[in-house]
Amino acid sequence: MVGSGVLLECLDSPRVESVVSVSRSSTGVTHPKLREILHRDFLEFKTIRDAFVGADACFFCLGVSSAGMKEADYRTLTHDVTLAAATELLAVSPQLTFIFVSGEGTDSTERGRSMWARVKGKTENDLLAMPFKAAYMFRPGFIQPLRGVRSKTTAYQALYTIMRPITPVIRALFPRHTTTTVNIGRAMLEVAAEGFPRSIIYSADMNALANGD
Image (cartoon, rainbow, N blue to C red; front, side, top):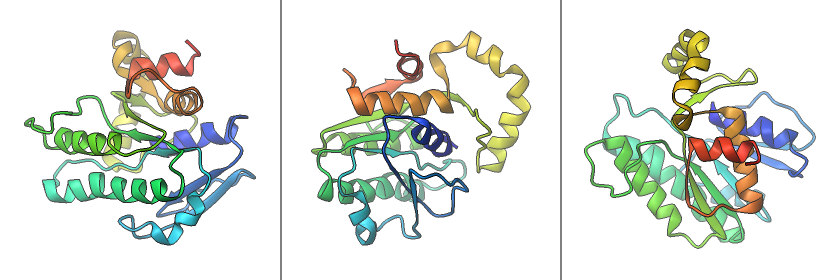
C-alpha cells in the first residue's frame, strides 16, 4: 500500500527523472518515467543490480504483517530481504540515500517484548550502520491511503474501508500519529533531495515535510 502511494508521488514529481520499481507482481501503472522489474527471489538482488547503478535514492516500502508469524520467518521477510537489497544497492550506488519504511513503536534496543518491533529495530540499526550517503527510517503510525491506493492485505483493506468515514476524526484527534500515503511519498522525496537533521522520521515530521514546513 505504501509503495503504491510513494510510486504515484514519484511519477508526479518534477524532481524525479526516472523510477525503477522492483516487485513480485506488476504495479499496473504505465508511465514514461517508470521501468518495472518483476523479480521473484527477494533474498538475491545481484542479478538485477545493474539497474541500480546511478540511483540517487531507494524508497524501500516492502513489508508484511507479523500477525501469526514466527519470529524467524518475519525476520527473513523484514530484515534479511531489506539487507539483501541494501547490500547490492551499496555495491553499485554508494552515493545513494536509503529510506526504509519501518513503523511507530519500533524498538531500537532490539530487546523489547514485541517481536515485530525488535526485528524492525534490528533492520533499522543495520541499515544505519551501512556507509550510504544517508539513511532514514520512516516510522508512520496510522496511514490513510489516498489516490485510490489499496492495501494488498485483505484484513487491512477491510479495516480501512470500515474506518474511512471516521478517518478525518482520527487524524484530527491524533495528528502526530497519523499520516497519508501522499504525505509519505512527498516526505521521502523531500528528504532524499534535501536531507533531514534526524535519521528517525515520524508521522508529524512526514506531514510537515510534505507541506513544505
